[in-house]
Length: 143
Image 1 (cartoon, rainbow, N blue to C red):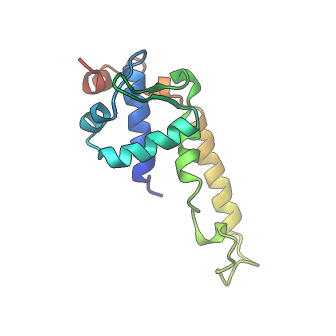
Image 2 (cartoon, rainbow, N blue to C red):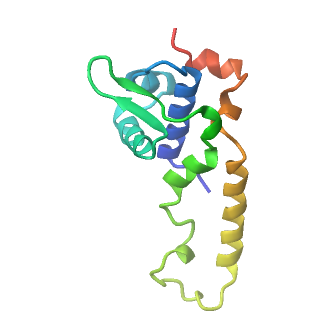
């Protein structure tokens, strides 16, 4: 399993906003701090805002900030938004392209493993990632 760039950028964006909590941040600031493309960030920010994890404001004084408290945003929720649209295996697709589909038990094993994966991520909040993490604050805090 490999984390997609979009999920990675989503977590970086949320951590950046959490470190700079109470302040409106700009997409450019996140891009510079996280080594990301502003175009990729725009897509990620749009989806996070549609899911109410970010609030955005247009205009000259615009930018973005967290849409919920860092303790209320779980890593599992973010991963589901970005990763669950991609099937983990061909078995998960309804197209029936696998010749073993009627007899194979691997799909159940993989489904159980994914449930465990997401369950573990659900136990970790954004606050857990940034709270007391002085090294991360030093990297992401806006002067």
